[in-house]
Amino acid sequence: MSVTVLGSGTWGTALTILLANKGEKVVLWSKIESEIKALETDRKNIKNLPGAVLPDSVELTLDEEYAVKESNPELIVFAVASPYVRNTAKLVAPYIRDGQLLVNVAKGIEEKTLSTILNIIGEEISNATLAVLSGPSHAEEVSRLIPTTVVVASRSEEAAKKIQDIFMTKTFRVYTSDDVIGVELGGSIKNVIALAAGMSDGLGFGDNTKAALMTRGIAEISRLGKKMGAKIETLCGLSGVGDLFVTATSHHSRNWNAGYLIGQGMSVDDAMKKVEQIVEGVYCAKAAKALADKYEVEMPIVQEVYEILFEGQDVNQAVTDLFTRDKTNEHSAVDWDYTN
Image 1: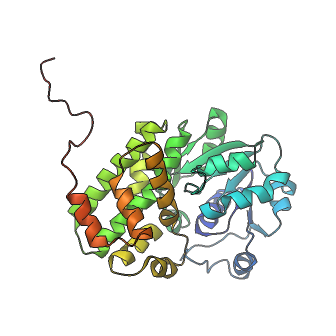
Image 2: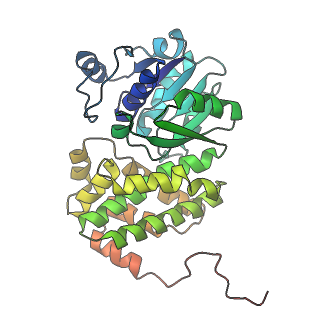
Image 3: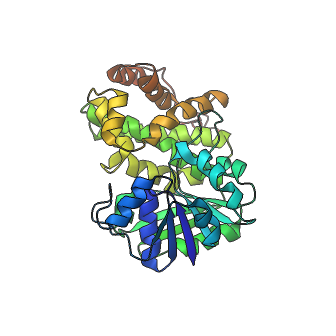
C-alpha cells in the first residue's frame, strides 16, 4: 500500500509514523522546507512529538507533483492545518488523478465561506473520492502507538471501508460512518468549547464547571448539527462527545492550553504565540458564530468565546453572562403533559 501524507505538522507526522510502522509505503510532503530538513536531520527529535521516531522507510519530499502523482499513492492524507487547506488543495489539484482516494484529517470551518474542510477540498479537487477521519486522537499519543479509536466518514461505503482497512492496527481502531457533516462539525466546533474549558481551568474553577461547559457545549453542537443535517448519534459518538472530552481535558490540547492562558489573564495573541501551534478553535470561533446566526441556533458558549476572542469581553463577565441567562428547560424534549 502506498500512502502520501500532505503536511508534516504533528498530526501528519504522527499518522505517517502509524502507517509506516504498519508496513505501508509512506511519502511525507510539506511545503515548509525547514520542517522536511529537520526530519531528515534527526528522525528521533521531532518537534512536539517527544519520544516518537520517524521510521527510515518514510520518504520525505518538498515536491507536490511527486508526492501526489509520481509516487502513485493509493491514498492521499490531507493533514495540513485548516487555514492552509484551500491553498494546498489548489497547489496539488493539477496532479490528482480521477477517482483518487483522499481523506482529510484536519478540523475546522472556513471563516469566509462557512465551508467544512472536506467541502473546501471538494471545491478545489473535484475529481477525487473524499472522506474525513476524526475522533479523540492526540498526535502525541498516536505517534507512540498508544491505543486510540477514531471514525472515518464518506459518502462512499467502499471508500470508508478501504480507509478503515489502511489505518486499522492493533492500537488504532477505526469505525466507519456515512455522516460526513456530523463528523466534521463535531471535530471542528468542539475546539471552541475546549477553549472555554481551558478558560474555566485558568480561572481556577473546578470539575463541576468544566462538566457543565462540556455537556452544554455538546448540546449546542447538536442543535446546530441537527439543523445542518447531521445525525445526533454521530455527535454523541467519537467525533463529537469523544473528541470534545479529550480536547477539553488534556494538557496535550493546544485549544485547552490557549484557553487556560487566556483564563489566567493573557491576551489572545500572546496565548497563541505561547502555544506555538495552530489553535484551531480560535479560527473556528468566528465561523461557528456565523453558522449559529445563519441557522438561527442558540449557542451561548460559542457566543461568549467569540466575544472574548474578538470583542474584548472579560472572561469573568462571560461566566456571569452564561449563568444569568433566562431560565429554560434542559432540552426540547421536556413535556409536562403526562396524560397520554
